[in-house]
Each structure stands twice: as C-alpha cells, then as structure tokens.
Amino acid sequence: MFNLEAAILEWRRQMRAAGIKTPDHLDELESHLREEIGRQMKAGRSEAEAFQTAVQKIGRAQKVQTEFAKVEASQTSRERKLKEVLLLGCSILMPLMVGRAVLVRGPGTVGMTAGQQWSCLVAMAAFALMIWGGRLGGYRFPVIRARRRRNVINLSGIVLVALWWLVFFRVIVPGRDFTMAQFLVAFIWAFFIPAGVLLGMTLGLETAARSGRGAA
Amino acid sequence: MYVGGMLTKELVAASTEPLILSLLSRGESYGYALIQEVRRLSGDQIEWTDGMLYPVLHRMEDNGWIKSRWVAVENGRKRKYYLLKKDGHQVLKDKREQWTLLNTVLNGLWQEQVV
Image (cartoon, rainbow over all chains, first blue to last red; front, top):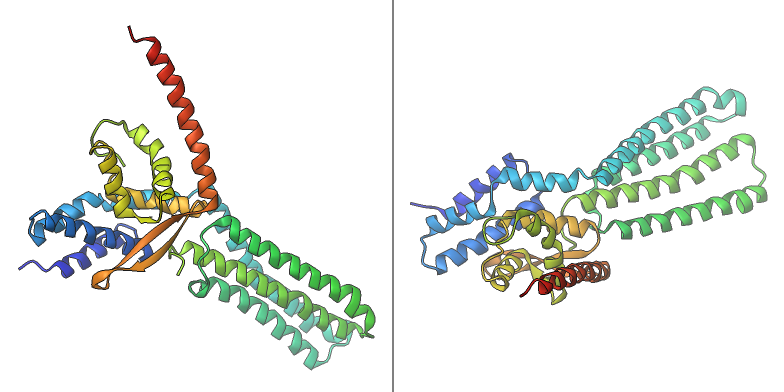
C-alpha cells in the first residue's frame, strides 16, 4: 500500500543525503513536490504514479545541490567565510592577550588591584561571548538576505561605536581623574563591550542570512 | 534548467532571470506558479527543470533583487512567495533594454534578408 507521507519523508532524506541540508531549501522543494503531486492526481494519476513523476521532474538531487552549492561558493561567499574565521580567531586571541597582560603585568606595572583584574577579564569574556553568541545564535536573528541592507546596518553600527569612542576619549576620560589602572579598566570596558556587541550583531545577521530562511 | 523544446541550453540560462523578474513585476508569486506560467506563455516550449529554479531564486534574493516570505495555504501546507524589490525593478529595466537592443538589431538584419 503506497504511503505518500512516508514516501515524501524518504525523498527528503535522500535530498539531505545528496547535500541539500538547509531546512528552508528542503521545505521549498517539498512544497513544490506536493503541488506537482496534486496536479498529477487531478490529471487522473494514482498517488504512487504522481509521486514518481513529481520526483523525476524536480530533477536529480545531485544536480540541484550543485546549483545551490554554486550560489554558496561564489567569490563573495569565500571572502565572507574567511573574514568570519579571522573574526572568531580574534575573539579568542584578544581576550587571551589582554588577559595575560592584565594578570602578568597589571599588578606590577600599573598597580592593578585584584578587583580591577577581574573586571578586565569579565569584559574580555563578555567580548568573546558576544561574538560567539552572534555566530552560534544566528538563527535567532532577523533574516536580511540582501547584502546591501546588511552592510547599511553594519555601517550604522560602526558609526555609532566610533561616536561612542570619540565621546569616551574626548569627553569622559579628560573629565575624570583616573589612575593608570582605573583608566585601563575603563578603556577595556569602553572599547571591547561595544565592539563585541557590534561584531556579534554583524555575525548574527550574516549567519541568519545564510540560513536560507525566508523573512518571517 | 533545460529539458526540451525549442531553445538551447544557453538561451534558457540567459533568459531565466529576465523571465522571473518580469513575471514578478506583475505581482507576488511562488516557484511552482512561475514554472507553470512560463510553460503556458511559451506554449510548452520553455520547460524549466523544476528543482533548478530554486537556486536561481536564491541567488536573486542574495543579490537583493527579490525577497521572500512563507505563506500558510490549505491543508496545513506552506508556500514561499517572492516579491520584486526596488533593486529588482532596476535590474529588470536594465535587462529589458539589453534584450530589446538585441531584438531590434536581429530583426533589422532579418528584415533585410526577406525577399
């Protein structure tokens, strides 16, 4: 006895095995499959025949996957992946470097207290977490497929962060009587937290856009 | 994209984007409907391989020419509808100029050859 739902599930599994893994792509192809099956059955075919014909018409999974892969592997895509790897690398390297500086030279050179050291480490950990959060939690971000719109959003973020740094260095710092250690703590928080928010947001939007989901 | 009919593979490939953009300029639509409409308009001469349309749509969406949304239809199913964006309208205009130019030149040449 032919079970349409089971057959469709198996077809989905085969498509995934051929490399079409994005749920959104699969959903769209399945939606198409069902429309074609409906059309074939209206033309008088049995469920089983309709399913077979519809599957054939979608085309060999390998070929479809190759086309999807071409879109993925375009030049901009490779550049983007490289930038992402560099960013994630920095998000680990920088906290390590700053952490080391703060723990090893902080107390001696600058006169940092333990509290101040902890404060710096927390800031750097937040920095790393925000970047990784953006990358791993990409599915929570709104899907903005058009690259140009994402660039506009990122640019606005950069401008805002730059303005903040300007305010910090020109207005806040001169206005206060910081010790060297206090200045360092303030600087680390003022620099890395906004940077982490910005970079995390950028990564999150990129990841969401790549996910293949339609907006909403 | 090419299954059978009059057009060469190259022509089908080259004409996919202007066809999709032109169809979407008439209003929102979804993949399956686009394929059926092209087949109908061409008298079954242009038959896009069903599965191959979707990577093209995704590329066009990545370029910012169109955008998509999921819509619930009957039986608890859903369909992905595509809509032309401002950039897409501009690209359509450009492509239309290119195809019109080609058409004009070729027609001019062929008319000369009519005895």
